[in-house]
Length: 116
Length: 112
Image (cartoon, rainbow over all chains, first blue to last red):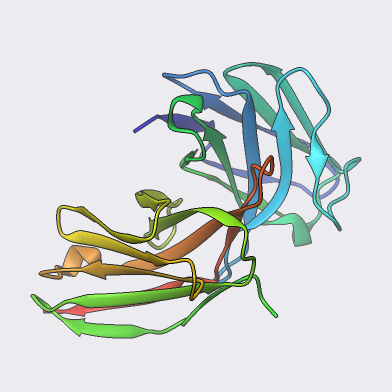
C-alpha cells in the first residue's frame, strides 16, 4: 500500500502558541489529502479536505481561521493549529488518496498534540 | 440516525475462532466500503475495500457486502491475539464525494 508520513509524531506546546503538522505522501502524488482529529475512545472526525493548489474544504463546526491548511504540492499538506488551547489537545491524523486505487485513503501515523 | 453504525463492543473471541464484525449504513447511494484496523494509540490501517455485492477474501479476512440490506461485514478466520484492535467501518457516499464516513468502531479482543 501507499505510504504516508507525518511530522512530528508528537508535540507539546504552551497555550497560545501555534503548531504546524506536516503530512507527506512518499511514493505517490496525492491531489487530495484529508485531516482528521480523534479524541480518546472516540472515532475519527474529519476536519477538512485539502486539495492541491486550492483552498481546503472544512467540515461544519471546524474553524478555518484556527486550523490553517496548506496543500502546496502534490506530496505535502500542512495543518497549523493557531493559538492552541488545552481543548485542542488530540490525535491529529492525515490521510491521502492514491489516485491509482480510486477511493482508497491511506493514513499517516498521526501526531499527538498536547497543549499545556 | 447515524450514517454508519457499528456495535461498539467489546467483542471477545477465543483464539482460533471466527470473529464477525458488522456495519450498517444509511445512504443507499454509497459506492465504496472499507475496513480499517486501529491499534490503541496508532492510526488506522487499511485491511480491505469492497465495492460489489458478495464476498471478497484476502488471507484470513473476508469482507461481505449486501447493498440491498445496506450491510457490510468483516470476518476474521483463525483469530490471533494480534488481531485484538478496534475495527473501523468506513463508507464513501455518493458520486464526486471523496469523503469517508467512519463508524465509531468495534473493539475486538482475542482471548488466548
